[in-house]
Image 1 (cartoon, rainbow, N blue to C red):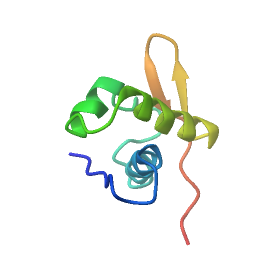
Image 2: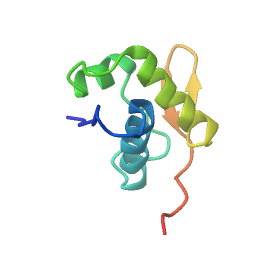
Image 3: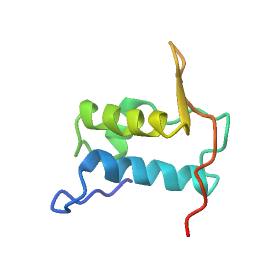
Image 4: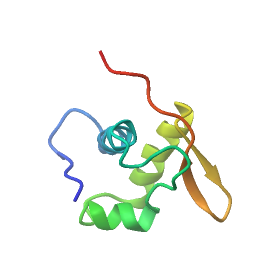
Length: 85
């Protein structure tokens, strides 16, 4: 289950991107593996976020170069996040 804080100052899409980034960093979603689909992520949040929020989170990870979408197949991890300090 993905827990997001609606009352936090951080937007929901950034919170979701942070959760996914942490999963990639910990090896729960290794390089080459497909991320959960938008429907799966929606279910993991208990329906607490819209598909648009999920899409924005994925777009953020694409912009960071961590994931890449493959038409008709899904979004795949292509790189590990930079180490945190």
